[in-house]
Length: 274
Length: 287
Image (cartoon, rainbow over all chains, first blue to last red; front, side):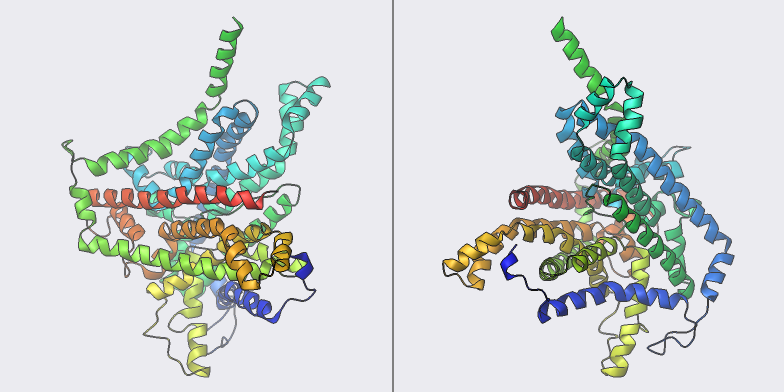
């Protein structure tokens, strides 16, 4: 827009506004990184000294690795369930069942309208029998429901950008059977979408606190749950754990950028682990 | 004959959808419908409004008011500031800087929950970085008037994920304002103010409305950030519903169900408006 009015240098007002925005977005992150290696930082503008003690203390707590493992297991399980439940469905609707698109769209918007606490309350009350009651299994189902839209959007955007019927016909005319068409032609073509969808699900579930705390609670402690505990006990350790969370989020975001650079646009406006 | 095989194909096609539909029914739709039913009936199976009457008793009404205030303020601030920042980013001459700023928004809007809450304690807590800076260099005492653990603190923390979300939503909308329109308007004698009021704003309006309701819903449903920052000091709808599940604060389960249904209604309305507004907005950003 307004190409003719575009200058080669930003105006001072623009620099001011964008500068404040960057400051607001970066300061809490930098402060957390510094706090995690500060010895004491409550009387001065800059810390009085630096050490890695927070990290060492954090990692000597056996819960550190247990919760890290729990969160990883939960995230990977959610990605796998999502891959088996969501991806084939999106493909199926795209190729064979266009008339189901509105229904699928609606089902994929629903999770945005359900707060995590409400989903947790509904699931806990319905599944109040053993062995599923308050189990990590029920939690996985909840995190999959919660993150379905991420997988859906990534994969369906990718499908829309690829001419599936032509590719399928071309492969079939060269003698490929259904399995080969899917494995050698379709999946490689929608792989960037599947990858960014999986990464989004992974990152969201890894940072997820609400469902984990309310559905399972202390029986299956996740990394964010331990982090919240430490915010009330030991600031340095809490900061160290926040740094680990931030870093994982950065890495996943970079990977998604890299994946989406491979030809599809990943839409991300949605409701995460707030 | 051909007709019947066609029908059979259709049925088979729908069967392919079955695993997914069953999953949604089992873990999303049926539990929500049962929640709705339980909120409306007594244990003996009689229709009752008692749960809803309980949910609007002063104690819980205040949590609705707090949640609506928090969501409304952060959505309003997020929309207006996001609009200005988004325009600044959109007009930035260097494409590289623009892409980096969009990437920054993309990452930060997903930094939420406990790590974000703790980052704000470090910056704005009673011994926080900014708190000390104000005290030492500007001689301004932020505490006790301001507190990161109160509503004012939550507003600043929520803005951290609301603002970049709005920036991401509004940038494509600016792309919908064609430069030819600006030129034509200028040629016809319109000044900048007239252009924005008569042309720019109406084009942006659906995106602004979509942004506002999405931000509102985003804040209304949030739990982790508020839980970490305020604990139980500030009464919010999501925190109250959480207490029903954990049983930390004793209350009637029926009231928790009624509050959950009411918040579903509020969120559902927001998402419905969002859908309508984005489809309107797409009219401009496409093509």
